[in-house]
Image 1 (spheres, rainbow, N blue to C red):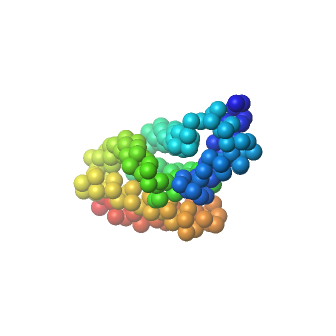
Image 2 (cartoon, one colour):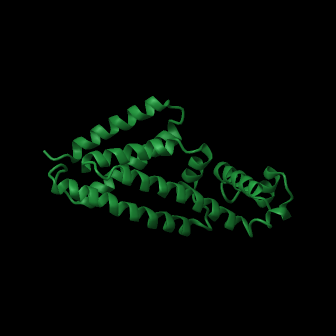
Image 3 (cartoon, rainbow, N blue to C red):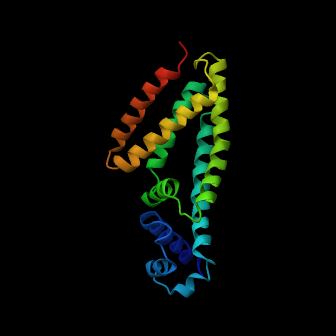
Length: 201
């Protein structure tokens, strides 16, 4: 099967998983969307689950490549500037994802497929913990430099993640029609309030 057809299958499957959920997406629906017989799909993939994980891994790889780029770009910044930069670019970058990918992430994180739930959440947590260790180091550096108030770093990190993911959910689920300027404005205003709580006096 050609690479072009393979990519089309993944694109159709991504859209169906995102819009309808894993359980409601059948191989028949994927085949119909691609315009091939169901039997032809098996020349490409062994099962719906295998197709799901291939799509998941593609998107996961793109996300972590993006985050590694942000971490590298911000390496020379002060800890406080770096936390803000990572916060803002994470939210702006995820807003610029193709809509299917964004919807896919929201669905599987908040409503993971029952049969795949444990593996999905375990995998997401494992990768995010690796990034979390990098954030923790930035926070510790900020405390040591007298830029961030003295508090348990893990509590500051928890509040950081809570704020970031809460704003991510709000902008993607409840405010999807905001302009780019409005999104950037909300990100900056939310960060200013957060910074008042963690900055050193």
